[in-house]
Image (cartoon, rainbow, N blue to C red; front, side):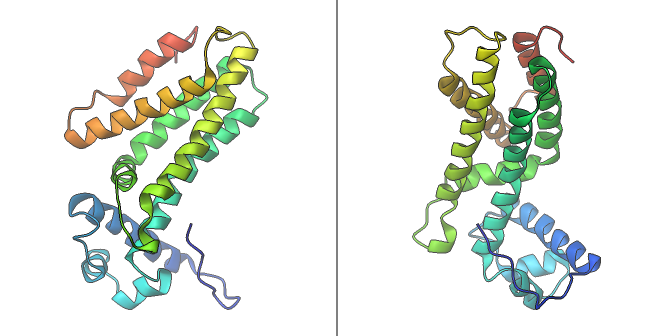
Length: 207
């Protein structure tokens, strides 16, 4: 994961945060359309409307920028699952909330999700570009959280006790990654329709 730059005790201004967010959006667009290898920092600076020096203020290189984007994307899903696991709400209720929140997040992060998918396949000898290993670490954490959530469903009698939570967790991850891959090809079914079908399968009263 990336290490934040020291600011000598100075508080960042909202304008600085806005510029950084603008750079990230430009990077997502450029990396998704042109490719990581083909995109230069000069092109990123131009697309974001900032100086190249400002890019180097926030990130030491292009790899550090993409590393931060990957973490930013995946941590959102990890936090979503962690909240569901920690929730004391009735199981069906928190599962419905998880479906709803995950759907919103997946739709909001469409381009970033696709970028992370590409990163999972990226191979490089450079230490600052170990994106596939980085994504794999996040996948392991997501599967761990899914397994815990599914185990609770089995223990509470919501699911049959013959089900394997580890296998189901892997299947859930594959389902999401498969949809992201199909969306890259332009052949994905509507995400909301897919989620509705899952709710019909898993929940007694779908949203």
